[in-house]
Amino acid sequence: MYVARESTKLWRRVCAETTAELQLLLQKWQLLLAGLVFQYIHGLAARGVHYLHQPGPLLQDLGFMALPELGQEKGYLSESVFTFIFISFLLWSFHPFIYHSKRFYTVLLWRRVLAFLVASQFLRIMTFYSTQLPGPNYHCREGSKLATLPPPNNALEVLLINFPRGVLFGCGDLIFSSHMIFTLVFVRTYHKYGSNRLIKLLSWFMAVIQSLLIIASRKHYTVDVVVAW
Image (cartoon, rainbow, N blue to C red):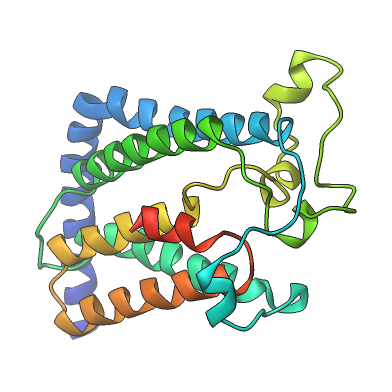
């Protein structure tokens, strides 16, 4: 009886929350769609700068001196931390559909998140097109076949951005780190709207760990991470 009663309450809450969120979505969908479209534009810009990338000697970097190099075989560590942060935030952003404690509407939360992401990514595009640095990542170094791209045969080749390979093995989009943009926007959002103090502290700790792993993996120069912060 208890399980059936609680299940009924949960179902009613999910239905009520879904109705409220859909009403907001119908009102705010334009900005949400614009934010999602800009994610593609950002990817397109990152793909475009790869055509301009010129590999060269690694720049002198304080973070590289201080942190031991993880190597290619451990490059997955920073990606694993980022994936955990991304999925955790995504799931948390939908928790009002289930839990009684409600401090935001999911549609409005993602509207604000996307607005901050777009602003940060616009600045990022401006910076990495202003100055192209020789990529520190292994596939961007001198001697790597992936470090430079031949001129595209047609516009479609550029527009398709060779997803997902073109995203995973891009070069030239350095200042500043896209991974840190997402990480810090997510962490800052939870810090403002979340309720668990321990998770807030843990999220900031993970942001620091993510920063160090990115540098140790040689995916970015230290300046890319510092500017993102």
